[in-house]
Image (cartoon, rainbow, N blue to C red; front, top):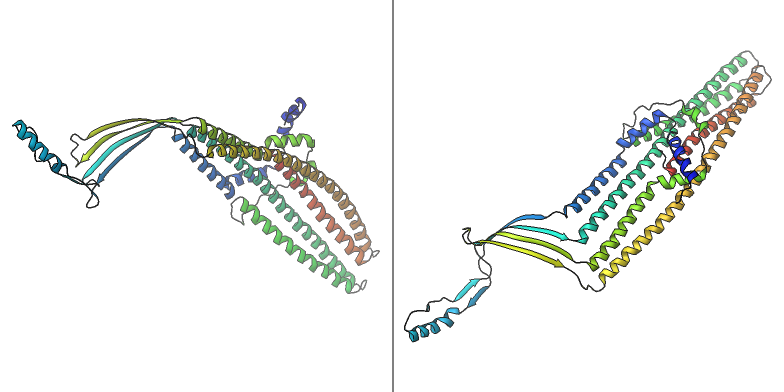
Length: 455
């Protein structure tokens, strides 16, 4: 994607600002702890180490191979090599001796009767092999480097996802704490109402049903509070699980987050799309896979056109019995391997590698579009969340004012109990909605940071 000069200038200024939007130093510490301790991220680190060892193995093929190979053989029975050399030569040599009148030729040559499997035979040697020119080794090394780059990008993808998950879990936990606090405050109000109604009944100002109604409302709130406390403990356990800590470990609270939710800064969606395409490690991973596929094409093309050349040699001792006398030998070798025809297999492999390259190029274009769509969705989700927060804040102000008026009128005998309970229920609902909307802004901001890969 081409960037204009203005876009580059904006990115130079915006990325530091975007990177500095982490709303909580406490949360940042937890995120770093999660990146160090999370088990899923540790698995990705181990996988990266495994792929790195594959690169080391590919690099080792550039060096000569030296091997010490002693072999000792014992044999009994089996096939034999039988050749009547004595029966063929001894009569002829005897006749020649008679004709020449001298014993010039041996007449006691034995027949050959040897085991094909050598007995008491050893071959003690040192072997050296070195690939002078091998395209497979060269391109395999480049492919392994590309795979490491892809694995590193994959680890950063998991890291980016983990940042978002930890932040969301932290906000979820804070929201459950807020819900428990709201329910407790409402229960305190209803208990005060119960005591007020008891005084009114004792003074014959009201009938007993106002007491029982207030107690019923308290019991309903106790039930809602129990559910809220359960949600709090579940959110706490999940957050600690992400950090690979004890599930009941205490979590520090950043009270300033309730004030930063409404201060979430916005940026042009087009610029955020460019930032996302530049930062997202999924594209880096695919680009690494594309380079590996392109090197695979070059490997198959070179394998079809260029021969491999190697040199080697053996030196050691060979013979019957470990005497090492007159058993030394040295062999030098230079070789060339060139497959001239294999039924069009190599042409098919080249075409297959090219298809894989085209597939990855298409996949990269698709992922770029998906990332741009994700940015648009996350951007407007955040915008809608901020609008919802503003609406709930206005609703809370109105509900608080209405409750104070009804409370004053009820204490002066100018309002019914049902009006009081409705006002309190509306206030409770508006407080919960405002709390949900406040932390939803933070969650949506974390989601936008995730899709733009801003840390």
